[in-house]
Image 1 (cartoon, helix red, strand yellow):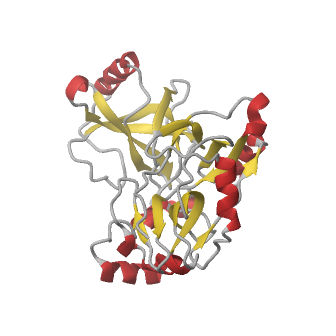
Image 2 (cartoon, helix red, strand yellow):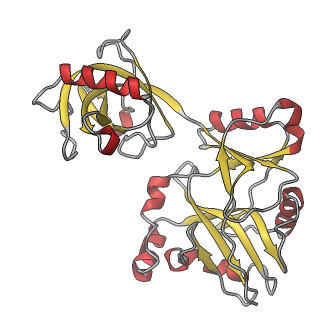
Length: 325
């Protein structure tokens, strides 16, 4: 059977629905992986496409057996490919060792032997026919009725109502966040819809500014990003660059502070490989929000929250975790 190409429906960043509407929504764990549409024509084969529509089937050879999981039933499944760490949590940095190998099947097979992926399924926009106009609640019931649980794939449950409790549980368990889906919502291919809302759990910590990168375009003459670190074993360890979170006024004020703290010496130990970096004396403390850390201790998706003039670098409480030093 020839299946239609369906672009994945996308969620809009936001907050929990009002408590008065809580029962009209379902809540799913937000996964930190690669979005995938799986095409099962019913002949035992499977075709995997990423969000942009590229064929990435060869990158994940362990998912080939999914093609026979529904027998002769034709379906298009929506899900996320994950790489799990030793605690069973999604690790995007680990997944990156598996991504981009669709044109290198031999290398993909070797990597799969070391780091297997897992596909979590959360929607079925096609099942022996299009289900795009059918409400989410009914599509979800159809998906769960397929019993798709295998060595490299599963269908995690969704909770109806109790959104605040669901969000709190993701934070307590160190998960990426929550996706809220309106029970009556159709599947809107390629649309970033308000019927799906994603909430990312962000962490906040203090960092010490040790340098900056020049801005470009309208930011010429201003810092495009600051280079930040945290104390670790008596030295300032580089933990990444932060390029968002300022208003124009705040960015101009920060530029003046950075110029006043200019230094010819890099304060980070070891010195990071950051072309075009301008170093400063490590005396400015700021607070940033971020999603997770990489295995090397770098902050993922950091955003500037505020300067902390009330703190000296010595008083800054944040440290790189001991196991990342």
